[in-house]
Image (cartoon, rainbow, N blue to C red; front, top):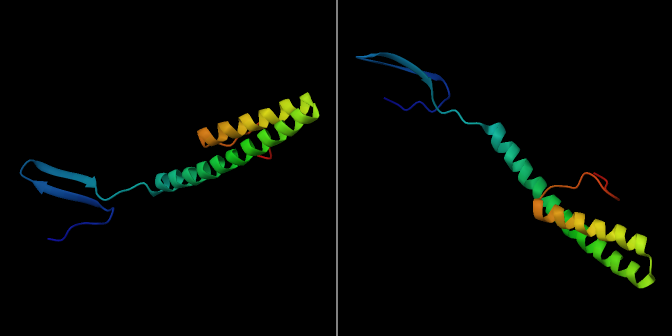
Length: 99
C-alpha cells in the first residue's frame, strides 16, 4: 500500500464504520505572508537606522546654529527612526515621511 501524499480526501473502512478526512494540507498563503512581513520588517529596521542617524546629525547641526524649531523637528525624525528600528514597522505619520 502506498502513502497518499496529495491533499485528496481519504477514506478508511473499519469494523466501526467509515471515516473521511483530508491529508497533507498546508497553508502556503500564510507562509508567504509571513515571509513578506519579515522582509518588510528588515527594510523598516534599516530605514529606521538611517532616519535615526539623519535626525541626530541634523539636530546637532541645528543646535550649533541655534535653530531650535529645526532641532526639535529633526529630533522627532530621529525618534521615529528609533521606533522603526525597534518595532520593524514603518512610521506612517509625522514629518518628512514618504510612506
